[in-house]
Image (cartoon, rainbow, N blue to C red; front, side):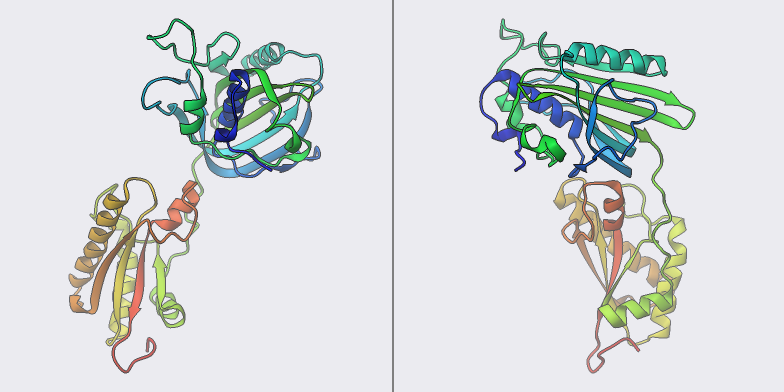
Length: 355
């Protein structure tokens, strides 16, 4: 059974191990057992003698990478400022060979990455407290991390191969972390490596590689008047992705005109049709702001259609904000699907379908 970070009890070293491993797994979903089908990342590799227990790769996703010492004091305790990157995200879980210290493994990774052109952005260890910012009100270099453990946004421990039985229960002693960046011909590559020491069960390496790249766009099909009519007739609604707005504004971009023209064509060919124009946002930002923004955007769409000569009384407006998602808001692909304008059919009396 997976455990969240906040479920663990005292022992400073163990808590830090959990934190470092979670830092390597932020934004990662459930990882499946690898059984050695996947190759190591060509720019990062593995420590000699390591065994890959699990692997996961997504062509495009987000990742938050630990980039500086963690402040684990204050009221309230601030969340770490993570380096937010997006691109192809690959996660590797290795069991390290016996008899090798985490210091040796970390320095080998550092040397190997440097030889391939990486630059170290951040490295730390629990043994010298370099993973933490110093509390000016305390003589000791660190404080209990339980407050941080309860406030940092971390996923549950993944169920990963042979590690599932002991990764979440036996972390102890010490941990190390390394973040490096490579500026290659095809963009930046980030390597995030968290090393965990666990009692008699051996040591572990969580390696995450993010290859920055642009999201593949134009994946949402242009909807013409015929498709709109079909969707309204069959489902009573149709989602449109061809209407674009300026960032955080209700002003419609010029490239939205083809979709607006198709809506006008639909309405002219169905003179009895009435629709509700619903604006939708993703879950970024505060919900009251999103609701107001989506409402104003739906009004802007109706105003644009009225300028073509359509009777504005055939439309009603509504702002749904982020409350009616059609995809998860945990990655850009899902958020893009949630940012949409939707047409909902309003049946006139005596009419049961779009003519």
